[in-house]
Image 1: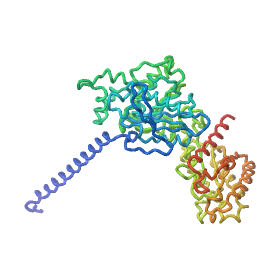
Image 2 (image 1 turned 180 degrees about the horizontal axis):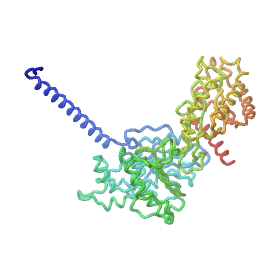
Image 3 (image 1 turned 90 degrees about the vertical axis):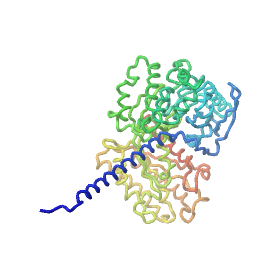
Image 4 (image 1 turned 135 degrees about the vertical axis):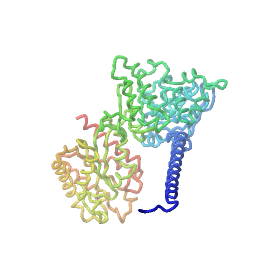
Length: 560
């Protein structure tokens, strides 16, 4: 029998005690860290309320206007279209803590379209009685619209107010109060009830509770009736003013958990307007049981997994003439760049649910390339892009097999169909290749280029047949022009002439395979030197122009 050594149990106990103490300390530190991060997350301004971001592209000038209400000077950022034809006006509203100079991610999208734009101040941050939906703020908004119409070239039937967070709050308020026939009001993650938001913000320990209180404080106390007057939720529906207007509300389903505004603000306001516009349509209103379930679960278990908006799953959507609500997989945010494509503007776009595959080279591989621009104009569609810089139709460019589409087409199609999802098939396949096939290094092999295209189309047809997948509508896109004065002549010299010759051959190949042929070369050729970065690669605005040509093609096909 072994005799325990003196002190053995005491030493063992001390080690256990020490380990327990250490573990408790680690747990405590983790809890402190989590609490700190949680509080910081609550205090931190949402991404759409970043007041420090003040970048503005050239073309957005600072302007001033005198308030017709009290004579105060209002600042704004303004852009006038260069088009001789009247264009839409986008009235983009700053967020809760921002002002007219707060950078706006919609501005770059406006430049691509060359629309009119104004970003007014409406009394700045919502932390004082003159701001936060006051009569002066609403009047400032009206003044800004009139200023833009007077100084721009505005299609007055196409005025659209867009806002996110605090800007969406004023968008809803303008919908209820503004005395102007705005075509659409588009609110992302809006606040509709200031009283409820005060208590929600107070419970989250964020700064907005204090600011709401400052807006409506009298003798050191909150005037709840004043908050009610400034809340869209409690205002009467203005039938006469909104006879021809549309209201579209978008909200990330996790807002309120990971953002500052619970989704109930969007849902309950939508229900209020749905009851006013469609009193006899029971399905227009979202039942309490439905929205409460979504609020608790942060998802709709019955949502159609194939439906998306801007690449995000749609959890719930209600669409009626003049009114819609979309809850998507997201948080306190606006989906840019699709946001402007969702506006009811008479422009080239498509709101169908389509599956699209794109195959191209560097012009398609850029972050601002034509497939990316196409995604903007197809906000409800899924676009799988297989564009690679240096890609060819059938040559091992730079000695690399991965830049030869013929060698990789099976993998492209396999991957694309996997990404589209089970039981899904592509509706369109766009192919924009041929620029790199005209490089100097391949100039003596140009007779192979059209033959390679023929083989490529055969392989695509064979792949879909062998996989028992419905073949999409295939569209062969011509390579863009080259500017021989700008290109690297050692690399691309003489390329434009070779492209023109190949385009003629590509058209014949497309006809033989009974696929569509889209000649973007001739449409882009005029003044091409101003459309290219280096003689080969297209500027962002031209990439957008190219995408509009593709959507126009899709729209024509959908009408056949």
